[in-house]
Amino acid sequence: MEILRSPREIAQMRKAGLLVWEVHRRASSMIRPGVTTAEIDAAVDGFFVRHNAIPLFKGVPGEVPFPAATCISVNDEVVHGIPGSRKLVEGDIVSIDTGCKLGGWCGDAAATYPVGRIAPDVQRLLDVTRNVLSLAIALLDRRQRWSQVAAEMELYVKKHKFSIVEAFVGHGIGREMHEDPQVPNFVDHKLRRGSGDFRLAKGLVIAIEPMVNMGNKRVRTKPDHWTQVTVDGMPSAHFEHTVAITENGPLVLTAGPNGESW
Ligand code: MG
Image (tube, rainbow, N blue to C red; front, top):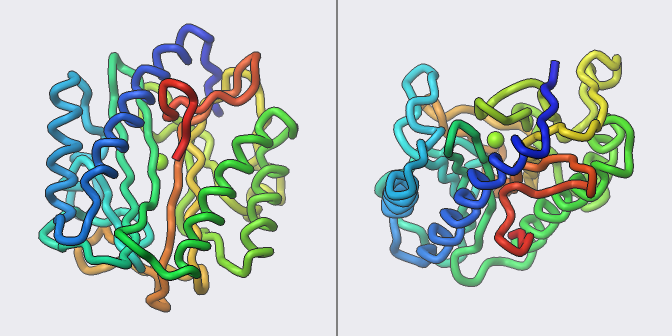
């Protein structure tokens, strides 16, 4: 069952979200050919530590605990890429996903960035993925239930001839990074039956995170136990914001000080 947050709690979460936005700005400013994904991760980790924030991704349990403050996923890597010695090259796309806990509250956001000049069809993949997140946010106070938003997200991506990844979904967020409810970017069997559906009530705080593949939706796990790659080897993009539904409509908690997004 999802938890509804008070305006005071949402204001606390905004502080964590703003720090996540700032760290994204810093990380994205480092993106250029030749930089390693480990260098970007180290900057994110250091930034959180200097601001008394706990990086949320480090130590997330799995076959092996996640070893870094960020998930960095390049090209055909969908999500959960482990930062390392890989150097970015011109024409790559790189997804940076990170979150922190500040004052006991969590923020989580992801964006996919171009490295120098990228192919036009890859740029279109980034645009469609960013736009489907914006669409979902805009619908939060115009629809009654999440299943209605998910259906429109799915339709939007299909219309652009790309595929929504179904193996991973968004999530409620608050005191913990992953809380109820699950937030799929498509209408799954649970939403269709109504059991996984939830009301878009004031006070709801969710991380919405569409992952869109240029080819088909299938993904597989690499031998490092974490990195998810497309089975067909085609590129994938990922955008995420932590969003609250307030009296005044949807509030993007991981946006910049003036509400600026990616
Ligand atoms: Mg997330």
